[in-house]
Image (cartoon, rainbow, N blue to C red; front, top):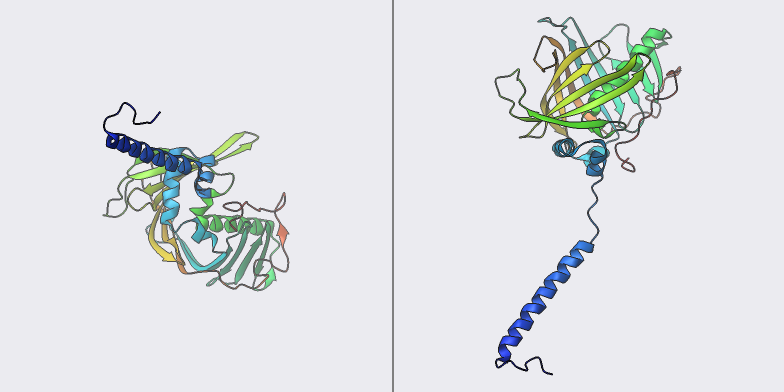
Length: 313
């Protein structure tokens, strides 16, 4: 039987067959598209593991604003001049120091700190949990000095690697309510997405629960400030970031002012100002730049941490 049997107008049948053919073609395109391999985004995959959707989206946009993870992972080390002024709530600095910092950006804690203006000259080297301190070329063996140098090395490394360390393990992130923070300058900050980084450490007397709230601008996606709580002494601090500079494809907040604060993030007395100058990445260091002639291991072994993403470094 002909498909045109019973139809007086063969042209109408041809039109109908054409419509069916076009529809089948579109259906094939949709089906082929549905079978294609989905794009893999390791950053978002990682963020979905450690955060809720709100926090994951805010941090992903923020990391892109700072240059993106691929650009950061091309950097192996950094050298800069560090100017630190301690105010302690006073109008004038109570203490100041100018240092040369060299930091490895890989998966081990590697830090070199050289005082540029102190007498006697002090150099601190930290390599994967081992620390060595020299003053005027002589090794220091005082346990308190060594432990302070170890803690300081970890702090400056953590600070410079912010915000990239948000992808480190075992970070846990939580998106919180949008807030418009107070500003210490006449320029209003504007609304921010707030993401909390939480650290929970079990102890004999109960868990220590420290946290850092990152205020991420909804306009620039850069960090405006970090509101922190330290459970050990129940203290709050507020660090305001400014003077963002692009260096080798990534952005660095070259000025960070830390204030006393409270639960609500109010700005209190000025505690400290840290400035990063002459920042250079991928510098050719000596092979043993992070290891001294005499090194003392940290209690319990090394301090290696996992890289940002598997296979990225």
